[in-house]
Amino acid sequence: MRSSVRSAGSDERRTPVVAGVDAPSAQPTTPPDRSVLVQVDDEIIWTAERLELAALANDPATPEGLRGYVGSYVGPAVFPSNKETLFHAFEPFGRGLEASADMWAELAAMPPAEADAQRVGLLADLVSSVSFLHTRGLPHLCLNDRTVRIGRERPDGPLRLRLVSLG
Image (tube, rainbow, N blue to C red; front, side, top):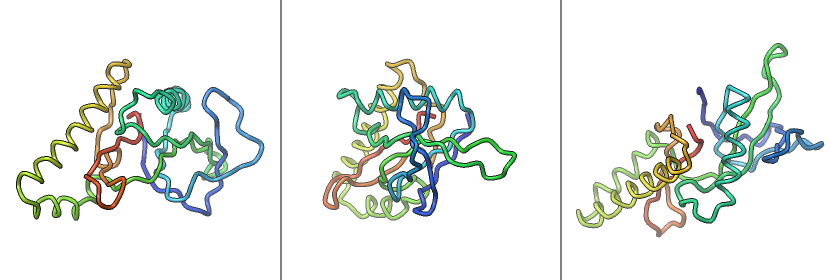
């Protein structure tokens, strides 16, 4: 599956689609500002992902690294001959791996034991998230610098890792 990740713009109009409901709501709305948007090219994959993402969001056993799903949306076609744009929205969290150079520099400046603890925490977030998906029969087929995000839940907190999209 091909997908792209971008941030929501406040001028973009989108129609939310509630998981399990095929018809969009009557009033177009936009995803929350600064949402991380993952565009999906295939409607069948998008539909299956939106159902699974909603199930993950409602499952208390879902690891923190898979939290943050906001909703799935249908956007207008870019050109009159194109199909509508399909995407999932996630809470704004951190940055993609390539854009996290300052966090890597911060890790390098820490005392070795503290830096190692942070790195182990990031790896634990990644492994627990991917493992949880695998136990549900879902391989994540697209771990890359856009779908793996690193940030902090609070300014003085440890670095955390989250996955956006199911791949």
